[in-house]
Length: 344
Image 1 (spheres, rainbow, N blue to C red):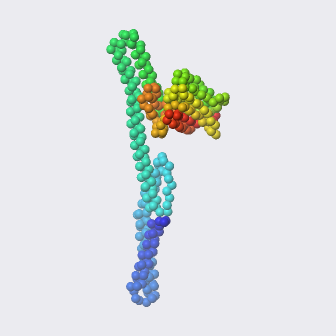
Image 2 (image 1 turned 60 degrees about the vertical axis):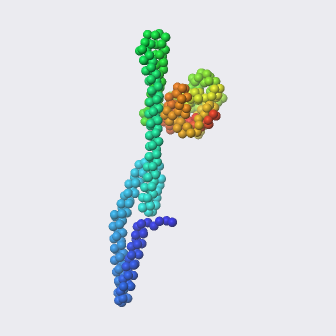
Image 3 (image 1 turned 90 degrees about the vertical axis):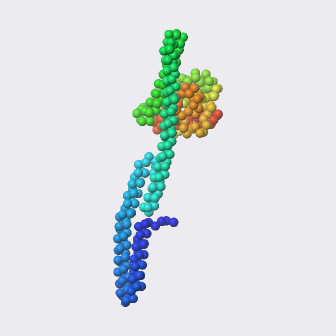
């Protein structure tokens, strides 16, 4: 049932009060009929004017405040990043009630989001600490060994220096990846689009990774009779995307498996698909797969030498092109990454 506006309700109350006063005057005075009618009329007018005056002051001191409060709540909600649901009613009190409930719901969701971000922040700091701690401790161990006499031992010094160099290279890789993500997130790293053949670029990356794939018996395949496919994108960054996805496919692929690179026409875009029949990823991990340092299998990922930043970089690069990337995976059956690029 539709609710009555408070202002209309007050008008009805004022009218009823005026009628009651008029009838009271009529029944309490037994003078002539004309005088009774005059009393009724005068009483009705006085009562109605008094009621309207009361309504006027109520409107100023109550309803105007309600309107101001409603405006304030709407203004605060409009500053939210979230899409604001349209709330309308002829009743300002109902509007205020719905706005406050909606605002409370927004704040609740915001608090939940901040709690999740806090968890991710702690995980991120812990992961950065762990990733950098391992090579630092390795370097420290090698240097201490050399200082304790290993420097004079020709069979040790060169070997330990080479190990230390590998640890330094790993630290540099982690720092470079973190810097790239930071620049992509803040917009400092500008995308420089150009027209190029994405099929040829992908083939170059495949050729560069062929030895690693062959060592595991993995076959990297392309569609037969592949023709040039031109896109408008940053060639260097898209190369990074192919390298990360194909390297991951080889690292976590099954021995004697297959990784297939495919291209599809999607209207204004080209869809690139990299699919393997490797170990796959369980459904619970998919929503967080593109997070920095997130690892499905932490011990195995670190053994493979990855920084845990590759997929995060891939996602940021594709989104910097205003395109999308998706992942579908089934455990023990394989994983498919697909992303779009604008046609050139």
